[in-house]
Length: 546
Image (cartoon, rainbow, N blue to C red; front, side, top):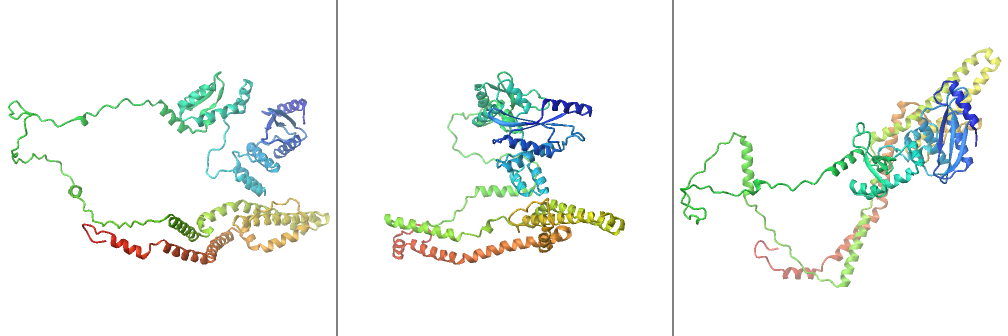
C-alpha cells in the first residue's frame, strides 16, 4: 500500500549514520472482525500521528493469511530531525486499538492497560470512550492477561507444521475434562503430547512444560491451563504420594486384664469365684504432686455433674385432634394459604432505596475527591495559560511602541482566544462535577478545540448559572463544604423517597393486613368441633391435666 524496499534500505542507512541501535520499527495489527484496506490504511495513519512519524515515509503491507486480513507497518526510527517516539508504546498502541474498535463498532477486547488507558482518555476529554474502556477492568484485582506463547514460538511452530493456538485449546480442554494429573497425562499421550519437568529447575523448581512427540515446545502447563503454581505443586505432591500400607495394630488396644498368681496360690484361675466378702482393705494411695486447689475443685464439680442423673421436667403431650377434610375442603384450604402468602408478599414489599447499600460519608467523599482531582488540574492549567497571556497583553498595552507596531493587538486576540478556551474547559469541568456527584445523568461533552466569538455568550451564561460549582472547583477550601452539603442532600433525598414510597403504599399494606386476618379466621376449626375434640381427649396417667 505504501513504501518500497528502497525506502527500507534508506532508513537503515540513515540509522547507521545517526549511530542508532535500530533502524526500523515493525507494528503488526490483526483485527478480529473484518476491515477493508482503506480502514486498515487509516488506522496505520493514526499510529503515525500518535508516535509523531511522517505518514509519507512509511511502508505498509496488507495481505491475507489463513483467511484473515492483517497489516504490517514499518516506520523509520530516524524521522529526519528526531528519533521515533517510544514512550509507553504498548499502552498507546492498545489505546489506539480500543478507540478504533469503538469507532468501527467492533467488540472491545480487554487488555493489560485498560485502567491507564481510561485515565488518559478522561484527561483528553473523551469521557464516553473512557467509560466504555473502564468497564473492561475487572471489579476484583486479578492477574493481567498474558500470552501463553511468544510470537517467535508461534512462528517456529508454524515452520514445523504445528498450530499453537489449536494445541493450546486442546490442552485446555483436556485439562478441563480431567480430574487429576494422572488422567491428564494419559489424555496428552493419546494426542501425541507429553508433559515433563522444565529445564530451568534452579530458577523455577517444579515448573512443567508440554511438548509434542517430536520435542517441539507447546508451552508451560500453568500458562496453558491457567493453574497457579502453588496449586500445581500441591497436585504434584498428591500425585507422588503413595497410599499408606496397612496400619499396624496398636498393641495397647489389644491388652486385656491379666491376673498374676503364684505357685502357692490355692485359688485356681479357672475355679469358681469366692462368694465371701473381700476384706475391707483400703487401696494404696500414691501421692501426686501438688496442684492448684481451685482447678481440683472445678474438676470435682464437673465429675459430680457427670455422675448425677439429669432431671428432665415432665411436659404433658399435646392433644392431637384428628381432623379429616374432604377433597374440596383441602383445595379450599390450599387456596386460602396461597392467598395469605400473596398478601404477605405485599406486606414484605419495601422501597427500592432500602435495598441499596448504606451511604458511607468518608468513603463517598474520598471517591468524589479522587475522581475530581484530574479535572481540577485541567482547570488550573487552563486558567494559568489565560492569566499568563493576559499579563503579557497588559504589559504590551502599556508600551506605546508595542501599540504602534500592533503587537499589543495580537496579544489581545491571543488572550481572548485563551479566555474562550478557559470558559470551555470550565464548562467541561463543571459538567464532570455534576456527573460525578449524581446531578447529571450523562457524561460531560468533550472539550471543543475550535471556538468562535459566537460561543462566548453561551459560555458566559453557563458560568453565571453555575458560579457556586465553579468556585468550588477553583478553590479547594470551598470544594470540601460543597461536597459535604451535596452528600447531606443525597442522604436526605433517599430518605424522602423511602418515606414517600411508604406513604403511597400504606393503604395497600393495610388492606393486605386485614385480608390476612380474615383468611386466617377461615382456616380456624369450628368452635363446636374444638369442644368435641377437647372432651374426647383422654387424660394422661401422670402429671397435670392438659
